[in-house]
Each structure stands twice: as structure tokens, then as C-alpha cells.
Length: 152
Image (cartoon, rainbow, N blue to C red; front, side, top):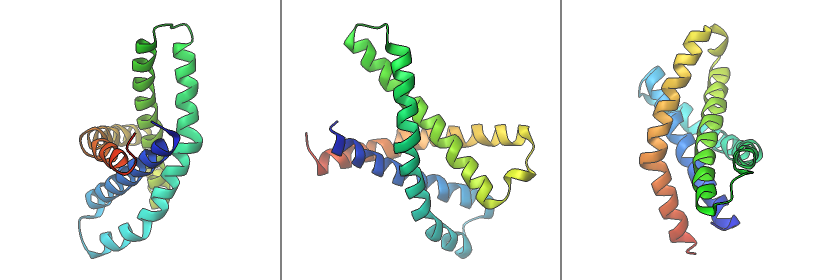
């Protein structure tokens, strides 16, 4: 992907993941009602902006560092590409999921009332949900949109 395609893909991915995970988290905690929709529409823009900036400033650099560290002795380009894709995918998912879910708990005021085991179980629940939403819905849609808007 070119830099413009990668930025557009990141924007679409952050938009899809932030909006879907926010909606699911709010619906799960307070139910689907008028107040949930009001809070969702007020918070989704800043959430998407935070996710996009976090992705560009933190997650990308962390994944590039891990890729460099894990592939520095490899010579086969196909293996390097495969390993890089796996590292980037998991680093992005873990970094973004941990940061965004912790941010939501902080903003809702619930983080201070949780035990460590509640936090860990909640994180793995969110991570599992994010993994399936990303791989089944958001990533295929973002990829199609990017290549429809900016063909190679």
C-alpha cells in the first residue's frame, strides 16, 4: 500500500473499530435506549480522533520496532513479509484494544472500582470481541473502500 492508501485504511479502520466497539460497549453496559444513542453520538467523534492519533503515533512505531527486532536476522523476503504482517496485526490489535478499553474505563469512572482480575477478564472479553469484529467486518470493508477510492 502507498502512504496515502495506508493513511486512508487507518482512518477507515479506526472509524469502524472505534464506532463499533464504543457502540457495543455502551449497549452492553446500559442497554440500547435514547440516552445511550445520545452519549454514543457525542463521544464517537473524539473517540475516532483519539484512536487515529494513537495509531499513528504509538501503535505504528511500536509495531515497526517489534518487526525490526524480530526480522533483523531473516533474509527470505516472503518470510519477512509474512512475519511482519502477523506482528503488525497483533501489535495493533493489542495496543489499540488495551489503550482504548482502558480509556473508556477511565472516562466512565469505573477503572478505579475494578479489581485487577475484573480488569484482566474485561480486557480479554474486549480483545476477543475486537478480534472478531476487526477480522470479520471492519478490515474487509476498509480494504475494499481503500482500493475502490484509490486503486493501485
